[in-house]
Each structure stands twice: as C-alpha cells, then as structure tokens.
Amino acid sequence: PDDTARAVRVAVNARERLEARTEEFFARFRWRPRIHAGINAGLVVAGDVGAAGHKQITAIGDVVNVAQRLCDAAAPGQILLTWKTFQTVQHAFDGQPLPPMRLAGRANIETIFEVTAPRVNLRVVGGPGA
Image 1 (tube, rainbow, N blue to C red):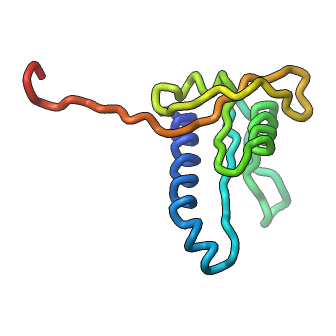
Image 2 (tube, helix red, strand yellow):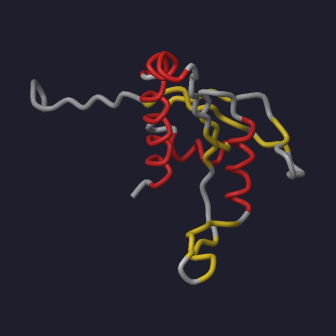
Image 3 (tube, rainbow, N blue to C red):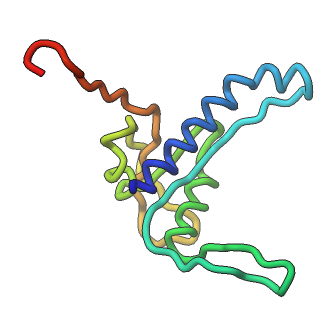
C-alpha cells in the first residue's frame, strides 16, 4: 500500500472540503477555518504512552519532528512535503518547489515541495486498439 500517497490525499481532500465550506463557516461563526499540513515519510517509533486507563498512541523520531516543522512553516492552505517524500508521490500529485528553507531545530537546509493538486490519471478502457 502507498501510505504516503494516502496521507497526502487525505490532506488534499480535507483542504478542498474545508475551502468549499469556508463561507458557510464565516456566515455562521464569523470565522474562516484554514488547513495547513506538513507530511514526511520514513521510519518512526510508535506505540502506547500513558498510564492505565489513559493511554494514547504516539509516534516519535526525526521523521515526526520534520513533519511538525513543515506544518509550522506552512501557510494557510499549504500542504508541504520534503523533496524525498514528494518524490514518492509525484506520480499522483502535482507540486511546486519552494525556496530552500532551514526548519527550526535542523542543521541542514531542506528542499520543500508544496502539493498543488492531485494528478488526473486517465486510463483508456475499450475502444480501438484496446
């Protein structure tokens, strides 16, 4: 399964659905909610944390920290990925490179991509030559 592409698809769908209802929210609550996301892929340490009766599942590690820094750097409406992560989903999503940036707490400058839209994958079914 392509977990990274599914995570990006969830973020894109959430952004689209929220944007479609922004005016409704504003009319009702006088507030325009906006989503921003940071997605990174790789190995993490995940598991139950907490006392009996109040456990939560959490993930820790550099991959999680970078995703949080991307989320912090994202403007409203942006979905940001590292270059390495974008490479794994570029078959399914369009994106554009952003100027390299130094994420908080990181020594290296990161190449960041913004996901702009899902790609439309057309498949010919039937017809001449099929």
